[in-house]
Image (spheres, chains in turn purple, orange):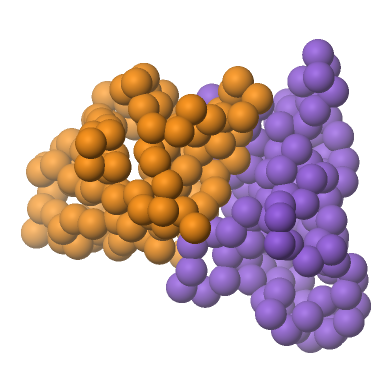
Length: 113
Length: 123
C-alpha cells in the first residue's frame, strides 16, 4: 500500500495570510506515460463530508476559489491557501489514486490564529 | 445536481453484519465514467477506502477488508449497497458513499460524497 503522510498535523494562520500543507507519498504517484500525478486534495469542515478541491495534483475543481492551489510531483505535494478566509477552517486531506488500495493522508487541521 | 444519501441501521451488534444502502439522485448510477464507492472514517480519525463498484457489477475492494466486504449495485433503483460481516468495535465509523471518478480509464478521486451515516458497533 502507498502510505500518505501530511505535515503539519495542525496550523493556525492569521486571516489573509498564507497556509501551506504538505503531503508525502511512500512511493511516486507520477504516472510517467501521461506525466500526471495521481493525487487529490479534499476539505472537510466539521460535521460535513469531504469536499474535492484539487485533482491531478494541481487541477482545481469547478467552483473552488482560486486562493486554493496544488503543486508538487512524484512523492512531495503542497496545498496552498494564498489568503486564508474564515470559511477555510477545516481539515484537509490528500489522497493517492495511483494504485489500489486508494489511501488518504491523516489530515491537517487549519485554524485561525 | 448529483446527490448521494446513505441509509441503514445506526447500531449493529458485534459479530453481526453491517448493511448500508446509498441512493443516488440527480443522475444515473449507470453513467459510464464513474464507479461508486464506500469510504469510512472512525470518530476523530482519518479516511479509509472500503471498495468501489461499477454499473456492470465489477468490484474493487481494499485488501484489508476484502474478506468481510460485499458491495452490490441495483441500477433499476439507482442504488448501491455495502455489507460488512463479522463486525467489531473497530468498525465503528461514519460511513460515506461517494461517486468514484473513472474518466481516464482508472479509478480516480471521490466526488461528490454523501453526508455520511454513523454506525456504532456495540452490544
